[in-house]
Image (cartoon, rainbow, N blue to C red; front, side, top):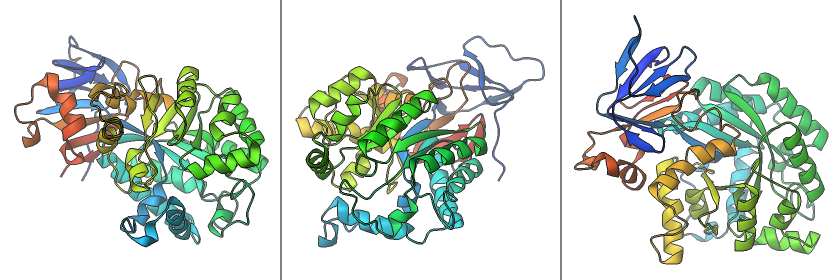
Length: 429
């Protein structure tokens, strides 16, 4: 079925989330390239302008998923949760490696296509794909599969090209799967610049050090400086497991978060997980502007733990292992896990509004897209999702309570339509 496009269209709906609130009688004028040319109450239709009314729907900015490993989705049904085989994160990791031991371009492309389409159906219009499975038949030949899949699905992507140099602090022999991840710094930088040329206007290339387990501190610093010089976001897996902290201290004298803070990281950096990062260093990250990408459904699924989050934490969200793809669920569990940990209903100011901003505005900042997407504002891309206001789940819900209901009560199935750059990419059956 052909999906509608709202380019060169005046769009209206009963409720639109703009300026951090739901407003009535708002019109959105979308230009020919899918950007918001104007938004407000008093827009008169131009002669011959297409007009569309999305009856019984609320329009919201599309969600921004700051941390994904698309291929992990294909471990679904193999959690082994509650069984001996599951005991630790590290046992799970062996299963994940087996999945990519013999991977090739078309398999990876298929994995990514399936996941990106599922993300769109969940209202996710932008994904940060943290990508380290680089080599199939040739060096870095798998990277283009990720960009191809995003382009076909119609999702905006920040491909977070990840450097991986060793299998741990003591550089143990590499597992077969890890051979697909590793490269020298120079070859890696070359791959980033090659990806720049492949990327269209809906794709940007960021960089990551996989972790301090996989990249030593001097090289991580070098990569951070490269990211700063080339104005790219920089991401890193940080302190998801106590073992990483213990091994880092015994081999280098400092913890990963101490190394990172010593590098002068700022708002261009995102630390992923920070599950075991101590309070004072979380506060230091907040002061320096570092984003923290939490992935509560994955951190629960893997039994990692609950990070230290407070009012100042610049929290954004990710679906990480993609076992279940729902930013609504991630928002809820970001709050519920904190509330349960502290036996309190007011932790870190995690209100519906703050959680929704984590899934949109802060996510855009983490991926370097603050001027592009994450809000329905003049000059921004019309990346959106709509919610079914006739849903029985919203019975007797006034608009003043709608966001709270969406964040804490709704599911993906209440999402009616999802679009990127004004083009509808998912329509509920």
